Length: 255
Image (tube, rainbow, N blue to C red):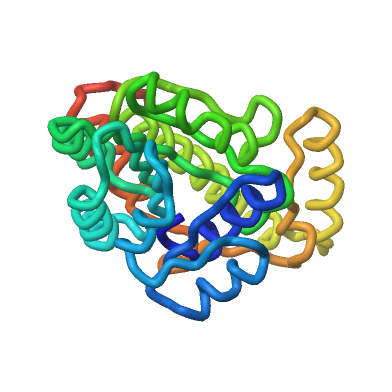
């Protein structure tokens, strides 16, 4: 596991709990030490990661999209051998993921783009995994996917790029729902009624849980919900990429 932030650390710990062997690397020695305390094998460098894993290796990169991912993938490309599998579990642009798969494939290294959803709750509840890439590479990594996801919570959705494409739309849907919640509660707050918004949220949450749509309920703990830009959890995956991708593919949707 390369990258031990909240997601990478959660993935590592869930794997360890199920008996997987995990080699952990991060630029922060403290992050490595924290996961090593739970049973991971610490690696001080990417070269050490390679040396600690037997071929065929599976290396999961869980760092921010953009330059951090590009740097990690490029460095690992020079270290891994044919037959190894490199996973990008971050929120990379699906076009970039397809290009990386082609470039790595020229050297016999398989690439999987794994849209990973679950946040801080994933350690206990499981992660939703949307996987794109070659079937053989998927089969090699599937024991890890089976551990990380709840029952039925992972899928091989298509070829290279498909995993991050599905995750992009997944995020667009999720943040659209959050926006709808925020606007709805703002309307409730602005009404002539003296409403207890926490009470309203709790009542609605019981309805959703009863129909199988339950999950962590942040709304029930707040009297008012507001959406503001720049908060942790927003990304290009749920702002510019989905509409831009639909336009570039000439996909027409009703407003």
